[in-house]
Structures are given as structure tokens and as C-alpha cells.
Amino acid sequence: MSEDTAEMPSVTGATDLLKGLVPVTKAGIVGPMGPSRLAGVVSAWYQWDFTAGGLLAVAARRDGDRIAVIDDRGPISYRQLDGDAHALAAALHGRGLRERGRIGILARNHRGFLIAMGASARLGTDLVLLNTGASTTQLAEVLAEQKIDWLLVDSEFTPLLTDTAPMVAVFADAEPAERRDGADAEPAERRDGADAEAADVSADSDRVQFEDLLADGRRSTAPLARRPRRGRIVVLTSGTTGTPKGANRPEPRSWMPASALLSRLPLRSAETTVVASPIFHTWGLAAAQVGLALRSTMLLTRRFDPAGTVAQIAAHRATALWVVPTMLQRITDLPAGDRDVDLSTLRVIAASGSAIPTGVVHKTFEVFGSVLYNFYGSTEVSWASIAQPHELRGHPTTAGRPPLGTVVRILDDRGHEVPHGTVGRVFVGNGMLFEGYTRNGSEKEISGGLMSTGDLGHFDPTGLLFLDGRSDDMIVSGGENVYPREVENLLSELPGVLENAVVGIDDPEFGARLAAYVVRTDDPDGAGLTEDGIKSHVKAHLARHCVPREVAFLDELPRNPAGKVVPRLLPKA
View 1 (cartoon, rainbow, N blue to C red):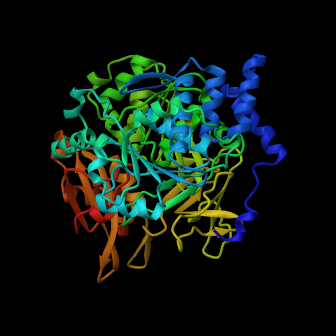
View 2 (view 1 turned 135 degrees about the horizontal axis):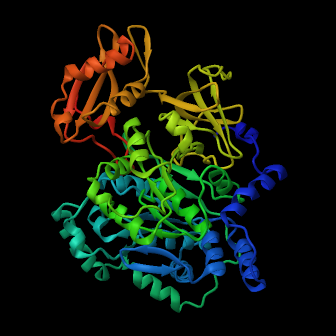
View 3 (view 1 turned 90 degrees about the horizontal axis):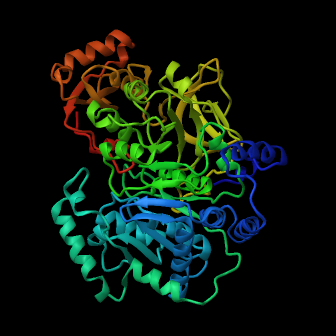
């Protein structure tokens, strides 16, 4: 990043910090407590600051008996989770891992993620979150590029490791046997290989069982650093093309990041939250960090199942659900009988990771009521804006408004702010902008202290933000600027369309043209959907140059584990 970063709009001044106390106090993060608990909380803040490890330690000292996580292995309290984080840190320290070392984690959603976050903070190491959708080649390249010292990995992924892999600790497969053949299960040949690999772990000097590490750490009496270095969490970009880059995410330095989210999300402490979005992704990571700050009971499952998620909400009376839009679509598409449970406790569905199709917004309100919050951000800028239910009801495609301590501006190519209603490039300033990529030569543009998101957008006259697509998605067809997202939003509301993607492709006559890829619903509306019908629908509602020249019907859209469509995997039109 350039030295212009120093000009970033400050959110750590005294006025902002005082304003930030309001939402965290209202949410219950800040509140009265007895002298002994207060002493423990102050000690934890001093040692580990506002890192994930600090948040975990504070929760353990303030509300240690509260259940922190319910996952495939059952419940675990905050005190137990904090103890396991310390044990892992002690074990890795005893095996030579020191400050500035790097821990990688390749895992689905379970308690091991939070234990790793806590241990990394205690050691002063960096924690690299690896994508569960990586190929063997991608994983080997990322492990080498990120210089991983220890890798914590689910047993199912060990067949992806090569002989050059670092020291490895393997999480046991704790899933019930009946889940193996359920939704989102892995191919049998991959499972068999993973089981065999897990059985042989004890015979490999470079690989140990995660539980054995914890046992060693519990026996350790060696002291850890009293106030270790503040490490980073490295999140990999979505990787829709090539090998994903690592983005250095800073740990919070105050309560302001939580205050920003809570200024527009009505979350409360000591409640139950379903974290369905993958924690290796920025959105799932945010859910885990906010959950720790709120001392939430987090419901985690290794594989997403829409009916199972609804059942979890009802059984545990969850008040919040964190999802990516594809998960939300699968939930709203469930038969009514699968949703015939008491969901009255659900106050917040927080969705992010990609655009929410307009049809899914309407269906969510129909099924769940006014509980949907659309979060717009990225790995690099963290958050930019949040749309609340009343805003989405009137404007289903809006990205909402910037939360507390956040600046969003729409700039032209010369860096000048454009009037409301004019499409320009989206730039963001807040207290959690990333600190640069781990790969040299890859940086985000900075203008006036604000960071580019890579998106195009505009504000309406009331100050609501709308996104018009990625800067590199816009095409010029016959001299007209065309935004594929506008067409996607229109098609998502067409009866018979389950999901769709619209992309630009080369055209020798017009320079570029649109191609639409459509997945039909499994009902009469879907069966009656035709290429001509889709083109006629677009022609009736949008300008002529927005009509796709080609329409292809697919069984499903190719997506990465974070739910984003991978354009390079779409068939050639």
C-alpha cells in the first residue's frame, strides 16, 4: 500500500471512541461486573488486547460457564475453549513455534477454528485461513508462498497434502456416520483416502493428532509471553482465477469494529447464533469474531444443510443467522413443510459474500419477515455499508448505508467525487482496512486516504448505496455502458429462474455482448422457460443493449466455497 494510507479518515479519535461505546453498551459487550471478574477481564485485555484471543479470554473470565460452541462434537464452554487455546499455544511453543511464525488452518466450521485463533494470539503468530475448495496444486503453492510452519487440517483434506507440507496437526473427523451420505458430502473416494490418512498420522513424525497436541499442552508448565506481538489473520482472496492471494487482515485495536457492525445490526450479547458461512472466508471470520465479543453460543456444522440449519434455529432458539446468499437461497427454496417449525426467535439474518438476488430478498421477507440485513464489504476493506430490512423492502438491490465510523465515496477516474445518481468507483475508509497482500506487486488503489473496492456504484438522492457491478465486469456494447448485475437482478425475479449469472463476452461487431447462464426451477415455471422468453423479458424491462445475445441453461452455476460464481468455469457461449 502507498504512504497515502496515513491519510485514512481516523475512527480512533476520542469523539468516535465515545460514540462507539453506545452500540457495544446497548449490545451488552460493555456492562457491570463484580470486582474479581473485572480484574480478570482487565488482565485479558492487557495481555491480548482486542485480538480474537483477547475476546475469547475476556468471555472466559466474564462468563466462563456459558456454552461457546455447539458443533459436531457437542457443546464446549468458554472456559474450556479458552483452556484449549492456551494448551494449543503451549504445545506449539514447546515444539519451537515462536512470534512471527505462521499457523495455517484448513478446516470446515468447528471449535478448532476458535481454538486456533486463540492460540495464535497467545503466541504472537500469524494465522492463515486456507480455502477448503483448493486443489492439491493450489494448496501446495499457498503453503509455500505463505511460509506456513504448522498446518491444522481436517482429516478429510490430508490427501491433498504433498511431501513438502509443513508440520501438520490433524483434526479428527467428528461427524456422525449418517451425515456422510447427506447434503454436501464429499465423494466416497476422497473420504476413504482421508480415513486411511488419519489412521496413519501417528506413524508420521511430521503429523500428529490435534487432540494429542492439546494433551501435551495441558501438561506443559513452560510460560508464554505475557504480552505477545499482535499477529495478523491472513485471509485468502476468493480465488475465482488462479492461485488466491493472501490479504493481511489487522486485528482490531479498539471496540470500534464491533461498534460499526452493531450500529446497524441489532445483535445482543449472550444469545445463540448460527454461523453457517465458512469461517475461512471474511464474512464467516467476522461472524466468529463478533460472536466472541458478544459471548454468543455459536452453532457450527462442518457441512451446510438448509433443512438442518432451520432445525437448528428452532431447536436452540437462535436469534441470528450468518449466511452467504447461496445458502439463504437454498433455505428459502425449502418446501414449506421443512420450515414448519417455530422460528419466532430469529431477529437477524446477516448475509454477505456476493450480491443477494432480488428474488431471494423478496422470498426471505415472505418466509421470515423483516429480519434480513445485507452486508457489503470485501476482504480488503472489511465493511462498507449495511442495508437494514426497511431499506431492502423498498429497494431490494440496495447495499444500504455506511455504519458508524465509515466513509464511502463514489469517485470518477480522476479521483473526484461524483453527484448522487452518477455511477463511479466505490472507495471506502474505516478502521479495519487490510494491510496489503502477501504477494508483491498486488495492491489496492488508494485515493485521498480511501481504498478502492473494485466495484462500481452510485448513491440515490436519499443516500442509499447501490452497486452496479465490478469495475472489470462492465462492458461497452455498441458504444453503450452495460452492467451485467442489472440484468441478473431482473432475471432473479422472473418465475422459473432459480439462479443466474450474466457476463460479458467478446463480439466482433459490437465489441462485447452479454451472455446469460440460467438455472431453472424444478416446477412448471422452470419447465416453460425458454431462451426467447428470457430475451423478451429483458427487452420489456431494460434498454435494448442489455438484452443477452446468448442464453444457456445449466443444472447449476459453478461456485467457489464462499458462494461466488467462478466465471472461468462457465461454458463458452
